[in-house]
Image (cartoon, rainbow over the protein chains, first blue to last red):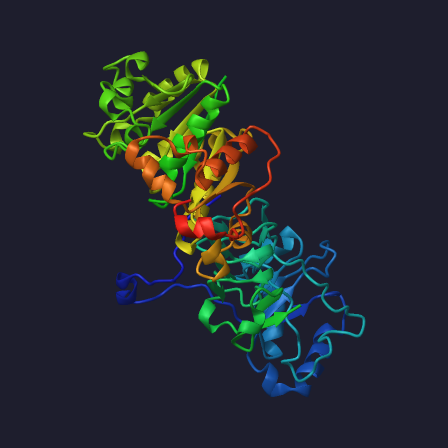
Length: 253
Length: 271
């Protein structure tokens, strides 16, 4: 249950000398949901769309979302790629869909990308669906599965709890000198007197909620505040702590 | 089968040995066959508090190492029936306490005694861990000040995670809070934590409040457990606490400053 982890991400000195560095990152990409590839006017209507905002679409990387297809279609991904290229779009991978489609795509160098959270399309000048009027907005995808660590006994001084990949829920008190760590949110249904660090893998949406804030330190995604810096008006109050525009915010509730 | 009770605190100097001697004596006075064991290897004190230091031949460590039989090391109290002391070694250190060795002694004592009181050393290292490992019940000795309370909290965490009961997934160790060296007048002046503060932090049931009393030091110096000094407030408070431990309903006393008359003034603070 209790295990130590490093709190700071440190780089190996030898990694810095390497001619490259591998790291995780997330980028925003345009998704094109394919609904009816048999439509005769598919590329015609796509070209019309691109013409409305040529600069936005120029050499735009594109991920093909195959979830809207039935899976029975015979798709020639080599052909699809070159015809998209002709419209100025660069397909770089696929997402979802039937395994046979994913395999066919991979054979022409379009790998299957892991599903991510659906992004808002408000970065595009044309917020309408790209393909056709009958296109549905992408269904809200399930957030990645999270496991929750529930603890009902008091978390005493000197104890460290880590909820890996999920939330930490304590239905008892957390003593001074105890440390709570979670990749997700931290809930304390009692007095929080120890340290609480939520979103330690970088989740800036993580929150800390407690019934009585007396914490030694609170932190979300690395931004922290020690007891001294917490305004007295929050002391012993039910408080939630979250990040907003890069600042650590406290609210009573 | 006897009950194993650990007297523990984390912090030193809060009154573990005084309380161990008082509780063991209190149990025996009420007719329960009791043994009190000194786990503070290398810093042997319990024999002094119990007044049997001049009768120690073999000790707990000798028994663990198979150099003596348990019956040779147990010292029978001269004043009270049913009371035995198992002193420790002054020349060894805590590494002499092996889990197997302690377990063997505990199992043997369980067959013969109703209560086995383990006087824990301070700290959270091997000696303290061995003292609490086999416990069925724990009495957490705490002074009304923040460092003592925090150390008690740490020990409660160890009881919940590292005791035998925790490791085997049995019923958890029963926890009791014994607040010692409580000075109601200093609490009123805000110089000490009050009972509610301590209970708020530790959140375990209160077994007793032992008022600060010069009788404790006096009793230690003459080797008579303070519970036998039944005119002292500390002695009475220990007696109440033992009664509560055994299931009696007894109101807490000595929480508020006592109104002192002229006679008490003349006697000074010697209660």
